[in-house]
Image 1 (cartoon, one colour):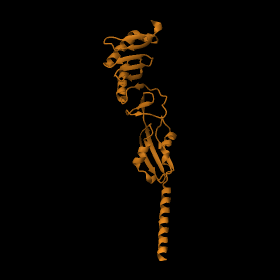
Image 2 (tube, helix red, strand yellow):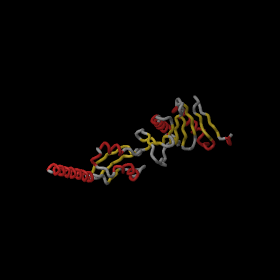
Image 3 (cartoon, helix red, strand yellow):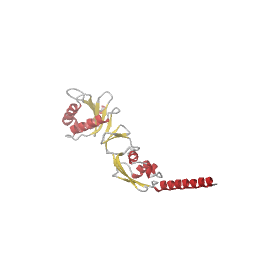
Image 4 (cartoon, rainbow, N blue to C red):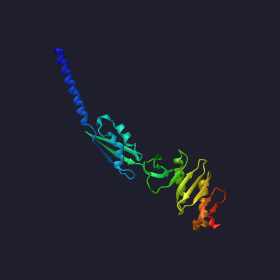
Length: 227
């Protein structure tokens, strides 16, 4: 009889401890996630769609590194800092990627050179860069050099493409396509600029494209009605 009473007392103690543990877990259940940061390309509501999986879980279940890894999972987020606000809230301070150019049709090159693929491609006035997989940094660097060469003119590059065989071509803001080939790309671009200033600038609407791959000149492809 004493053994039965002792067993019953132990059972009550265990149940009491377990109930206290459950109640303690509920004390720290995450109820609120606040997001701070200067956002231009995503919204707090979109980010919460990624973070709301934390709601209802105990704040004690996650260390800061786990929370930080979750904070930077959205495509637009470059970096973040996370703070637990006891007993049941999390604050995330996020920094967005800054896009420099489109990469292909569905991607963007960020300022740190990373390629990001946001769920919705934004309609923003950025140059379009194309090239083989993994070549985004080389294409971006070449675009910057091309832009420097063009800075002395009224021309601007809106598209730069690196073909698989290594040939470059650019499309200018006036719609003109210029083929530059694989070698001496900037020298050929400067040669085109000289011809453009002296002979072509007033007749752009009559030209389809320019081939600048020749060693001492350029070839102009005229629209059929001009010929």
